[in-house]
Image (cartoon, helix red, strand yellow):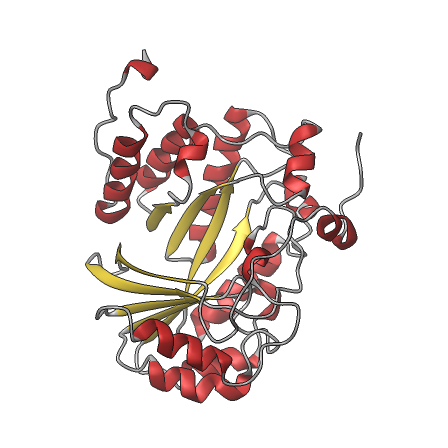
Length: 312
């Protein structure tokens, strides 16, 4: 059975949202990541709790940790204070909010000054945002920071048939225009790229289009690409999988596309390892293979594959 993708359909198939405290982030992490300079730095990542993103992308499951009402003033400030009190020192901070930092209903503009004050010790700040929301508030926030600034945007894919069906409401031209503007005002951009988006089910095509999307992003002016294996579990993706319109990527394909993207040497490439075991059929080697990807994320070079009986 085929059906038309719409906001209403995406929302109607969702499971319940998580229970949240608006004064606490739903998660925070201390990590390490290689920077544009080539140096590996400590990174504090805070996943903020705020109003749901207005865009209902087919593949997204980030709405699980969002609220239905606009974020009250001061709540984001409390969340950042809460996390920073529990995190060690770092030189880079990511403020990820399951949507768009420059959506005023998610991150109140009135909180910018307090937020920038809290993160003033950091040398580099990274947030996420939709290309459509590349507006004047970005410069306002950037000018309040002590360090450099970077915005992560979802390109997802440049496949001409798939991208319009993701319900993301962007085009490759919009992504390029947004990246150009951000670069012009001194802001770095990283792109999120999907491996195995819905509506593309052949493995070789998925690898090809993922790589083509990475190349496009670098040519558009990004400094880093994060490759994300597409997951089911949000309702609509499960329905698409049942209908044969979505096939989860195999771990072997993720490793292959990551290696080929690194070989491009056009900028930093990261491979997302969140829930990596979902893409593996072998319990014996999954931990070692995840460690291998983690190391390659840091050194930005290919290291030998893990040997396992599952590969013979």
